[in-house]
Length: 161
Image (cartoon, rainbow, N blue to C red; front, side, top):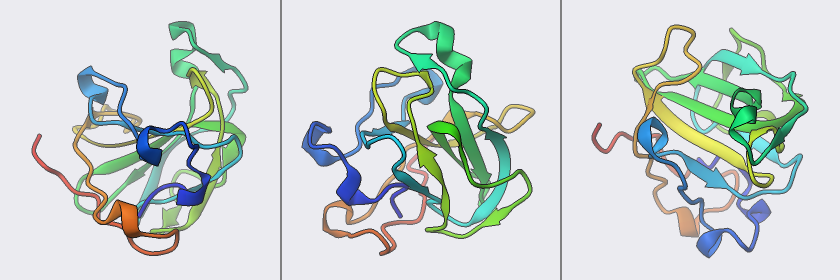
C-alpha cells in the first residue's frame, strides 16, 4: 500500500505520482510531494528497527544530510522500508514495535536535506550495521492509479538488484 493518502499528493507532483530524483544507492527511492504533517502509513508489516525524530532543521543544502527524521521497518522477506523527512517529533513508533500494513506511523515534514515538504520513501536491502539505510531496490505499486487509501496497493517487491 502507498505510504501516504493519495488525496494528499500535491498537484505539482509529476502526474500526481511519486517521482525519483535520486542516484547512487538511493536510485530507486521515491518522493511523494505532500503537505507537512500529512499522515504516513506503513507500506507493509514489519518491525521498527530505526527511528530518528529529534531534528527540527532542514533545507536545500548537503549540510542537512543527516538531519532528516526517519523511520525504518524490517520486513520478514529481508527487505526494509524507510520513511524520511518526517516532522519534528513526527514519528509515532519506537524501535522494537511491530507494525501492520496501513498503520499510522508518523507525519511528514521538511527535515534534512530537502527542497520542499515531501515524504522520501525507499525499500532497501544490504543494510548498514544500525539498519538505518542500505541499497535501494525498485518498488512496484500495483494498480497505483486505481487505488484509494485503505486498499492494499501492493506488496513491496524486488524487481532485480
